[in-house]
Length: 139
Image 1 (cartoon, rainbow, N blue to C red):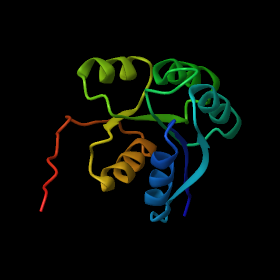
Image 2 (cartoon, helix red, strand yellow; image 1 turned 90 degrees about the horizontal axis):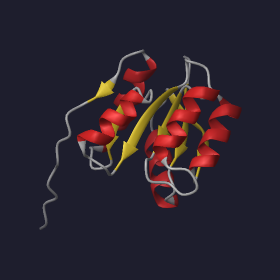
Image 3 (tube, rainbow, N blue to C red; image 1 turned 135 degrees about the horizontal axis):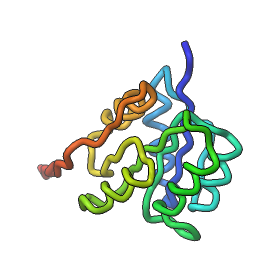
Image 4 (cartoon, rainbow, N blue to C red; image 1 turned 90 degrees about the vertical axis):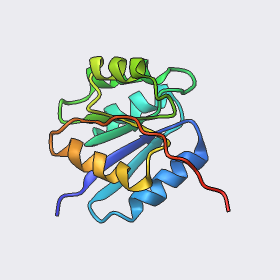
């Protein structure tokens, strides 16, 4: 079985740790690196050439849209980018798509959707799903 290699790029440590823990449950996905800012995301994507870069938009030193553009320039076409952001406005989705992202998920998505998006993108499909807000129920 070929592993899908993933680079996580998010400035929040707890988010990266949570994503890494979620993806560790998947037998066909392996996190090969983590970046805490946009410059690191570009450098690590260039060095590691992962199959998928999971990229936040709001990051220090270089925002996610600029990082996305630079990653597209310095990595092979086989490296795909999945934006994972708290921004749910259509304008961000359209900008990410125009810059070469293969998918866009909001952080409010159910956890299982991340692995599904990674697999779909790895198979050559786009993953731009309508944004649905789920409600959190309190006891």
